[in-house]
Length: 301
Image (cartoon, rainbow, N blue to C red; front, side):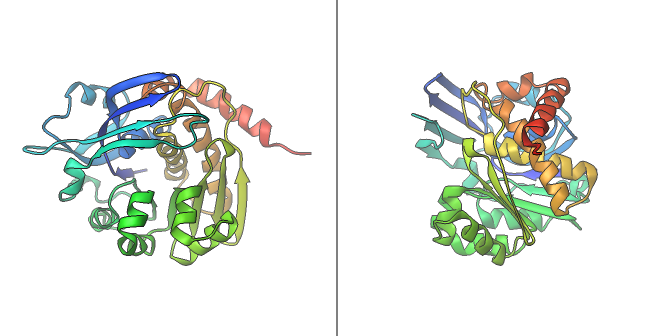
C-alpha cells in the first residue's frame, strides 16, 4: 500500500530544559516519514538546498523511506528553524525561522509516486499543499496538517486546502485560532463544516480529540516521564496514524480510532530524545509492548 508524504525538510536548533541540539535533522515530512516507516514503507516528497548535509541522507536509508521524491536544489538554502521550550514544554517559542526553499516553488511528485492512495500533506504553505496534491492521480484518503503561521497569513488558501482534503490534523491552539471558538468540541465541528470529514485536534500531554462524521472521541496521550524534546511529536503522531490507515486501507471511524492509538504510541518514542534519535531507537517489539500497555490503559469495565 502506497503512503505518500509531502512537507518541510529542515535543519533545527532546539533548546529544552534537558539541553540543546544544534543543526539537527528536522521538518514535518522527516518526522512523519521516520515515524510512519516503523509500520509501513513511505514515499517522501520534499526539497532541500545545496547546503543540506549529505550524511542526513544516510539516516533516511535506515528505514523503508523512498527518497526518489527528495530534490536537492542548486542555488537554494534548506529551511531552518530555531526554537526553545520552557516549563511544561507544551508549546515551542520560535526564536528564528528561515523559510529559504519553502518560499520557492513546490517540488515535483515523481511519476512513480503518482499512484499513491493515501496522502499526507505535512505542514507547509497551503497553496503548495494543493499544488502537490494535484500531481497525485486518484488518492483514496488525503489528510493535511497546518500551523498558526498559515492561519494568520494565508487563511483563504488554507480554507481552499481544507475543502480539498478528507481530514486535517492541528493542535488545540490552532483550532481556536482558525475558528474563533474556545470550546474545542465546537471548534472541531466548525472545522468539519469547512470540508474535512475527519478532524484530529492534538492537545499535547492531554491527548487528542477525534471528530469523524457524527462521532467524537477523546483519547489520552501515552504516559511517559522521559520528555526530552517535543519537536516533531505531532508529525510523528500523524505518521503512525496514517501508516496504519495505509496498511488496512479502511477509513471508517473505528479504524481511524485504532490508527490514532498507534500514532499516539509512535509519538511517545519521538519525545524521548532530540531530533530523530528517539524514533531511531524504536523497534517493533518496543512498539508492540507500548501498544498493548496503551490498550490496557483504555480498557474500562
